[in-house]
Image (cartoon, rainbow, N blue to C red; front, side, top):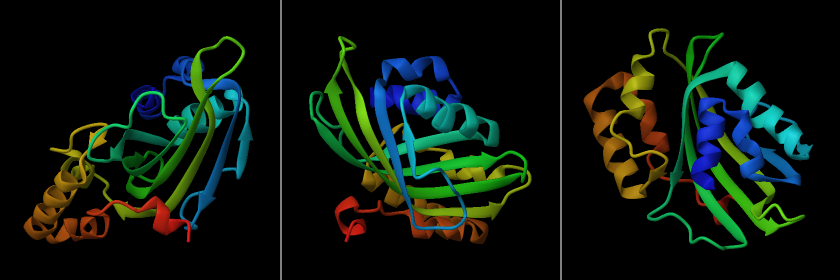
Length: 186
């Protein structure tokens, strides 16, 4: 289901949303930066599809959302905390958007739909805006990263090497370690 989320969001496929979210699911945000904004609360699957897929896809392209963890969570967990990294292009501004935070997913079964996301919280710690008119930095920062499951050791080694190889990529140094969801909540 979590792979389906990245597919729906990153590729702008709203028809996948009913396979992910319960009809009455709730999405909340906490945002620690002023470089991006979303509504604090979105109720219902249709609102979530509009916010996370349709509106998001109209503004951003070439998006890849990575879950930063050693292994995917077990099926059947009722709640999952996952650090994330997003690398995407803001289409209108022709710039790179580089962000990190964590997801808190709650799962349940409602109304015969089967297992679905009943609540989702997205914390955005950073969402940097980086000039990248030609998209070369976007290519470099996505290249070589396994998608969507990204082990922290791979992230660290890839981004340390990138930062050392090109001064224009030094900004990745700040993103080489995942945000610890437990530390961020304090």
